[in-house]
Image 1 (cartoon, rainbow, N blue to C red):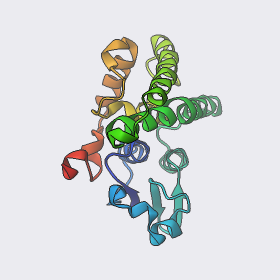
Image 2 (image 1 turned 180 degrees about the vertical axis):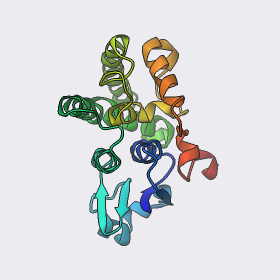
Image 3 (image 1 turned 30 degrees about the vertical axis):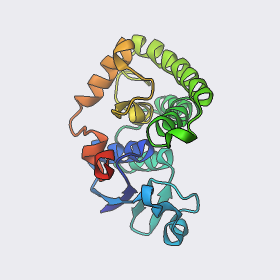
Length: 210
């Protein structure tokens, strides 16, 4: 049984969790109480020096970083990773794009505008992040006008990576209805057997702290 250390509010953990779920792997979530400092605890840092979720345990193997976990799960299960070396490279291209241009920006923007105390928020920083995210989404919108999924005609870990933060309900400047091809793509992902919303797939949500 694979164990995934995660919490519901983490979009990066969601990418790993949804990959496990859609690949039909045997796994269970292990709740990490991020907002009360769990990732800063010595025992967690001993498992992941980076002090972040997700962390995956598969027997004696421990992996961190969502993209690495997605790569491992798709390789182990033979699902969601492409049908050829060329497809695999295209999938990796979009995953690197996600890390730098999508999740790396959307995650920070969502945290700043929803979880950071108002007195610590910087409107100029958030405006810059939104500009960067909007530019990245335009690139995705252009691709999805041509293909049903980012790397072609089949769902892959690239789609799970790039869509991860977009499924969250908290406002951070993204409105899927303003991007019809992204909206249709997200609907296709939602229609995939086994798909679950992040707050249904992993323990922990903002309502738990309200």
